[in-house]
Length: 401
Image (cartoon, rainbow, N blue to C red; front, side, top):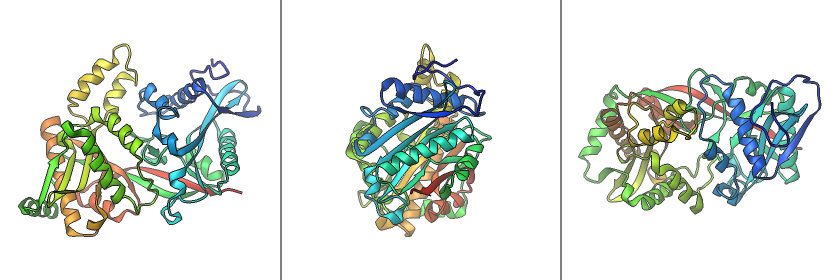
């Protein structure tokens, strides 16, 4: 079924499980495509998986295109057995993560694994051992994962929530991967949640009082993102984000190149009325981003733009009627943390976006996340608006050497 070397298009349940497993490093364009195609083949087996656009996935592991590689060392591996590909993994070191304080989760000596797929536990062990060996050879003393590749892309292994499709930029993994990783000596370092919300129902009296109080406050202005000044708006949002999240577990700042890259990638799915910036005394201090869930469109075209999928995607991007809404990022400047103002701004943005999502896009459902399990502020907001945890992700750690 699958030609070696790297001329592969799928994965089979290989007979002869006792055969020797070899791990081959990926070193060229052909190998990167094979690495992506192998992951797609594993994902195709999963119920509720939504195929992503292949070219976008290849770009994420291309050093010439993804600015993450500008501050990271990355090695991709493919596992082979009996001439067939049976798994894959990445090992990577983020120089910015190394520079962060150790008490924030990363820091000196911390490397990562990601893009983890395996045919069985023996393959899983071999892949993890290979990634660990590469990281140790680079001087790392600890490994965290799965994180694929950046903490801002797809962090964590899906532990709970396999019974429904993920929203965009959230991973979808089989339940048995957790057991294999834990059996290899890994312990859970952190849990991430996503929260599901029925947006057709108004929020309770507390939220409404805070929103009305904010609307009466002449110092506060909650406005839409202005796409005619897109580059400036992106810079404003990322500046707030880098400040607001700077004390969070796992934080790594965005670089200017990553800001530009993210802005270009996100622009097609940005609808001004779904994305807000809050100003106090004319100064931007908070933001909330909301994206229509592109997975609802990708599911219909099976992740294929050609020959006719692009027509459907173009129509959907112009007006994603009925799409679920994902809130991937929000932030308030640190100087306002733990103040009434921070809560007021958050609920004003949530309510403004909720109304627009219903009236203009006929949406009924939203998803908030990911959210760190111990982020008390965000968990409190999620509880206050009566959302419920619908997906749980784990990031694991293990000491090296």
